[in-house]
Length: 185
View 1 (tube, rainbow, N blue to C red):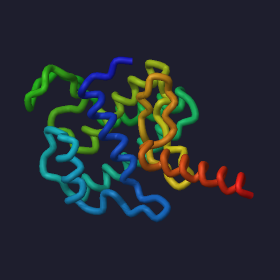
View 2 (view 1 turned 90 degrees about the vertical axis):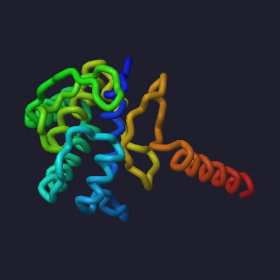
View 3 (view 1 turned 180 degrees about the vertical axis):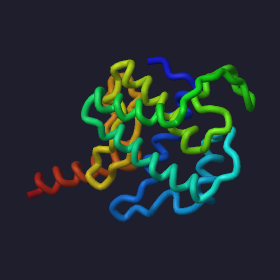
């Protein structure tokens, strides 16, 4: 599956957005407008004006809708969720070449809110996975104490953890220690 630069950027943004949700002892990742401003800057989201509390509330609601896409049990449900997101954003595809990037497609309307911008661009990035029959690549970490979202871009669709150096390694070490303890009996 060919993933263009702008699609990859949108995938990174949607994964990071979903992972800002407060869960089981993890604090809210977007506690205020300043954090939203940092998120926007960190993901180099263009054409975003002055951010407000309304933007923060809208992005938090959008985050929950994106989380539902990652939790969708099949492509039909994921497609329905994505269609709702993209339609509500007033998608307006247009070619652009800004900030030193070659030609690429933006799906949000000029002057769109940050939430509509994310819904359109990130929604379309997720849509490409459903269209390609690759919806199962939109996953949650399998570590019992971690449910972070990620997109499995491995060749054989075998990635199980959000980060193999943290969650994956921690579980492998625990399994190794359990085997040694059992063998020592």
